[in-house]
Image (tube, rainbow, N blue to C red; front, side, top):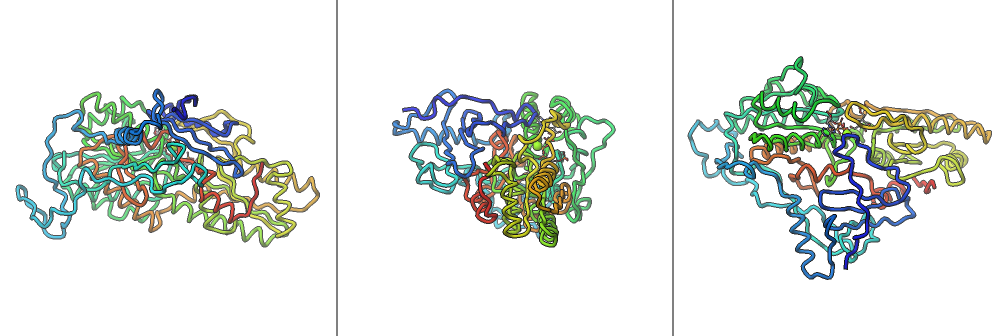
Length: 532
Ligand SMILES: Nc1ncnc2c1ncn2[C@@H]1O[C@H](COP(=O)(O)OP(=O)(O)OP(=O)(O)O)[C@@H](O)[C@H]1O
Ligand SMILES: O=P(O)(O)OC[C@H]1O[C@](O)(CO)[C@@H](O)[C@@H]1O
Ligand SMILES: [Mg+2]
C-alpha cells in the first residue's frame, strides 16, 4: 500500500542560486525534493488549518507500509543519506594517531614522542551517533508532527556525533588551512574564526590563512590572503563583524578550486548560510573530481536561523537580544503617544524565527507577522481592523514584522542581489503607510512610529550563549577536517553537536512551522487572531 505515491514532484531551487523558494504558493501544500526523499509539507496554512507532514522514502519508489521490513529499509536509506563523505572514499589513506591532546596544559610533545596513556581517553568514536528526532508523535495531528507513516511510527534517525577522533588523516605540520566568511554579517563570525585558528594550532598546524571578502577572495587577484595565528586572533571576538570581511555573489566553482589548488590549501573552513553551503558543496565535489586531498568543512552562519535540522545557528540569539531594544523603544513610543502604534521590522528573508522569538521574548508585541503565515491587511479579519480594536481597548499597539512577510501584498521588482537572492519589497514601510491611510479613512487619529533596526541586530559582537556555540562549532569544524571528512557541516541537534552532509541541510531554508508549539505560544502571547 503506497501512501504518498501521487504527490507531484517539484524540484527545489536551492542549487540555482536564485533562492526563489516558493513561499507564495496559493495552495496550502508544497513539495520539495530532498535528494531521494520527498517531503510534503504545508507551510502556508493559517492556525485554523492542521498541517500534516508526511515523508515518503523515494521519488521513484513508495514505501509499502504493509512490508514488515519497511522501518529497517527506511533507516538504512536514512543512514546512507547521512553518511559523511570522507577522503577515504576516493583516496587510499592511512590515518595516524591524533596530535590533538586532550590535556595539553603541560609542555608540548616533542617530535616523535608518543602521547602518554592518560591523554588518550575522551575522543569521539567514529561510530558514535546522536538522535535527530526525540519526540514520539502519537498522531499526525499532534502539534508540529513530522510523521513518516500514517501511524506516526517511532523511527530512530541517527546522525554522526561531532568531536575529536583519536586518528587523523592529515600530518599537521604540513597542512595549510584556509578560512573564509561569506554572505551577510552575523554576530560570532570572529569567535568561530578564533576557535578554528586556536584549535588548528593545538593540532600543530603552522600555516593558517584567511581568505578575504568571502568567495571573492579566491578569484580577485587584488586581494591578499591573511596569515592567521593565535596572536592575530586573540581578541577579535571582542568586536562584531568579520576580521576577514564578507561578500555576496561572484566566482565560478572552477576558479575557486583553481585558487585552492594554486594556494596548496589542504583544509578549507567555510562560514556562511544556505548559498555559501551550496557553493561549498560544489567546491567539495570539484575537489573530488580533480582528485585533490582537500577537506571542505562548513560552519552554518545565519542570524535568520534558517538552516534545516539544527536547533539554532550562531548569531540568532544575539540578533533576538538586540531586537529587544528596538521593540522596547517601539513599545515606549506607542504607550506614550495618544493612539500610538509602534511598528518594528526585523530581518528574516524567508523565515520568521527572529520576529517570532523577539516577540516571544519581549512580551510587548500585539501582532507578529512572519513569511510563513499569510495575512490580509484589509477586511473584517485584517490586521488593520484588529489594530483599530487594540487602539479602542488598549489605547496603543505594537507590531513586529519580519522582512519577508506579506510579500504578496507588494509589487515585485524582479531584482536580485549579487548572489541571486530576491530583493524584497519593504513590508515595514508598506504597513506603516496602510495604517495611516486606514485610520484616516475611519477618522481615528493615530500616531505611527516605525523602527527598522536592520543591520543593528547583526553588526554586533556575539552574546555569551552565542559565543559558546561558536566555540564548540569552530572546534568541531577542525576536528571534522582532521578526521578526514569533506563536504560536511557542523551543527547542534537536540542539544548535541553533530556532523551532517551539506546537501541534507540546504534543500530548502528552514521555516517556522505554523503548526508548531512555538508559533502557537507566540500567538498565545500576542493574543492576535488569524488575519485571513
Ligand atoms: N547555489 C549556489 N551555488 C554556488 N555558490 C552559491 C550558490 N548560492 C550562493 N552562492 C555563493 O555563496 C556566497 C554566499 O551566498 P549568499 O549571499 O546567498 O549568502 P548565504 O551564504 O546564503 O548567507 P546569508 O544567510 O547571509 O544570506 C556568494 O558568494 C554566492 O555567490
Ligand atoms: O543587506 P545584506 O547584507 O544583503 O543582508 C540582508 C539579508 O541578510 C539576512 O540577514 C541573511 O543573513 C537576511 O535576513 C537579510 O535579508
Ligand atoms: Mg542566503
